[in-house]
Length: 266
Image (cartoon, rainbow, N blue to C red; front, side, top):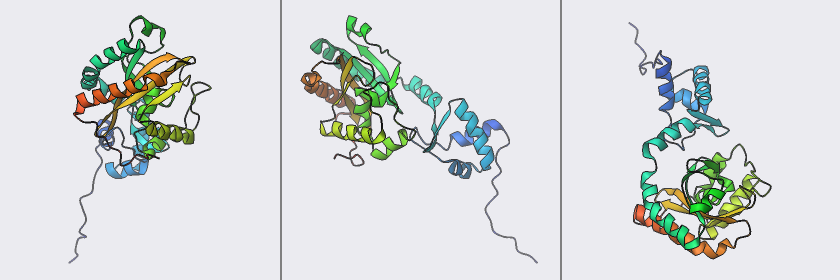
């Protein structure tokens, strides 16, 4: 009489391509999840070659993106999420404050959110002046080149910055930040400056911006900025920018307490 080995049930990958793609997509718990090919193959039970072939198709179709830090959810997934939520709560809370800020300063005001290494503009206020600024609602710009983006990046953990910029820090102009070490130094300076970020000609020649993040319990959820000419003394309006960002935060969350334990303050 022989005894059968006690083993777990053998996992048979589903036969259809749609089911296999779904298995892979279900591995990603959120927008910040990054997985190596071997981990995806292990989680799904798919052969490594099969998982790689499907992932390459998902990358080509922008459902998934691939960097040196691994695979993560792509632009198409994030766009669907944005359509679903529309950032309506953030827009509603910020709207009266953006208008007030534009009136008080007579400058163009932006509201944006962070999308990986880009900012996406949610609102733009400034009357006739706004037409002279090359930005648009729904448009995007490199986060590390804008005051909006730097203000939000400053409150992400340093290892998250490393992952986001694993493929490098591309320059938009001659004045843009040109490397990861320089970016970390700039983000540290922003934290020491009460979260206020300034850029002069880093994104668009001749333009300067000052921005501050809107920070929820889990980190930055958006940012506001004022736009002026490159030589404008933006430091003069720094207190009001900081104050408006704090007031929007209070309206959204009832507190200005945020996650700081994983962020360097030095």
